[in-house]
Each structure stands twice: as structure tokens, then as C-alpha cells.
Amino acid sequence: MSKYTYRLSGDLATVDKTVKMLKRMAAKGYSPVAEIAGGVIKFEKSAPSTDDFSIDTTSFKKDTEEFADYLEVFEGSDWQYLFSWKTCHYFRAPEGTEPIYTTEADKLAEGRRRIGWYLMTILQGIATAFIGAVLAILLVLTWPDAPQWAKMIFGGVQGAGIGLVIVGLWGTAYITLKNRTLDKQGA
Image 1 (cartoon, rainbow, N blue to C red):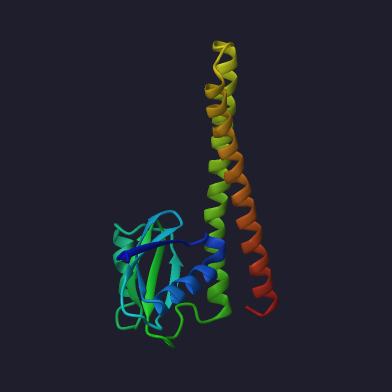
Image 2: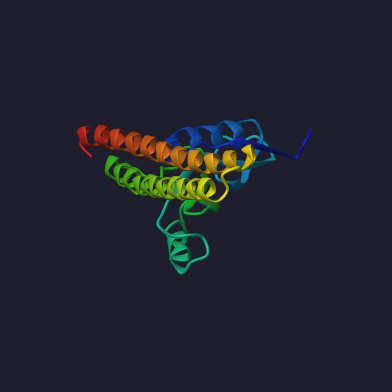
């Protein structure tokens, strides 16, 4: 049996599902050690635990002064920093520890921060699709007898851009609807 295993974590709109997956894996005896790529978490074989997990998103990355100040907030609490992927930070604590976000207002603010991620994804998608379209036009104008593989590459770039736009729109809509629900609950 391998010492490591890997699982897809989902995205920022489904943080709650990712947290539940982390807890299930810990119960099976796998401790999260790193997010090795966007959405892929590496787990190491360990003793089973009933620990709780949390994922926090911020506006800063791990290797900044702001991040050091951010971690000081957790000193003296039971929340132990595990690792980061860009501006998403993973924590674990003994089962029953008070959540990082305890009020509906906190949850609402966290959801609003996540919308920024999706808006950036939309912008990246638009830029990628635009670049793919420009390259495809240049390909047709400068290389009329281009082989099929070249046409497929530029079509793939456009498709990737359109895919990023769709993911961004889906995530923004999901978070917005979730925030409206929290607003109605009195956050």
C-alpha cells in the first residue's frame, strides 16, 4: 500500500464539500499534507483522527508579511496551519473546536471574498479566448494550408478560455445565491 494518496478538492464554491472530504480522509487514516496543484490534495498515511478542518481564503499569499501577521491570529487557538495553495489556507483542529467562522456574517464575508476569485477566472477566460481567437485568425491569414494539428491547438486555446469563463460564471452565481440565502437568514 502506498504511503501517499491524492484526491480532488473541488473549488472555492464548494469549500464545505472539500472540508467534509478532508474529515473523511482523516477518519480513514490519511492526513492532508499539501495541495500540489489547483484542486489536487496530497494525503499521507497516518493514524485515523476525528479532527475538524477549515479552509480560509485571503487576499495574500503564503510568503508575505501579511501572511505572518495572519497566522498570529491563530496562535493560542486550537487551529493548526497545514499548508496553502496560493491564497487558500488549510487548517486542522481537534474535533469540536469552535469554527474559524462562527457567525453568519463571517460566512457571508468569506463568500464575498471568494467571488473575487471567480471574477478573476472570468477575466482570465476572456483574455485566453481572445488570445486564442487572435492566434487562430493569424494562423488562417499567414498559413492558409495549416495542418489540422495547428488548427486544433488554437481551437483548444479558445475552448480553454471559454471554459474558464463558464467556471467563473458558475462559481460567482453559486456564491451569490449562497450569500443571498445567508442575508435572508439575518446575517
